[in-house]
Image (tube, rainbow, N blue to C red; front, side, top):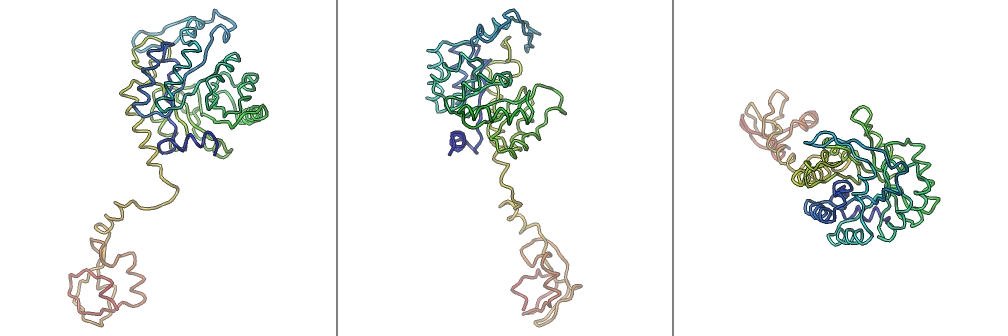
Length: 347
């Protein structure tokens, strides 16, 4: 069994739910621990963070980034400063990862730069992770592959040819399987292309979905497509005027989301047409049976005009009557008009 299959087998309904706190932790260790505790409490299987060193990630340290907030309008920050606030020391990383494991969850850390590979490896994680914006960073990908672990990627900027090429690059460098999260950066529904998940399945990938916002119905739809891994951004408060919080889910919302996702997954069932136990029980009450509308004696044949079909369905079903009538239906005993016929009454 692969590392990913082993992980999935431990999850409720074989769906790995990952709480994304990479931005919303704010680089604050206390807030991080609180978010991890909430993730465990509401039923997540894992927690995702991001390994950053802004000075090693950014060449142009003057670039700015503008993002919305829930109640404070748009905010512009120097990206170097924004990322710097999200950095943790190696000791902090050890404490975070150990705490996630202590609570029985899987730590996932997105590595954004080559220098982070050694730091990630020291954490002895079961999975490598990169984001969309590292898909063309082949040297980073090859370095991550050297530990032989599976790699979780987001799509977004690549097509099928790019994906297959990336899979070969990672495998040839010594890496494990590629786990592909369907990803997009658009509000245009026509470009979201959830049907691509069917193609990922055909290609043999374990796949999932990484939502970019608060359209929960898209998450439910992804469950219908058979995702094995699904993440959602968690925040203590959407009011926090920092990047990523406005479109995250607060604890009460995320609890309801986890409940609904688990129920959605459970409701998928199996590819087989079959009635529920309640349907079978109700069929006895609401299906129709044959009722005599004339008096009949023992040995009499039953003509088609002698019966009507009425509830309940505990007698001879209308579904079987025609075949039985054509082969000849005769009574063993006298039966009065207004009686529901049963198989025991027939010869």
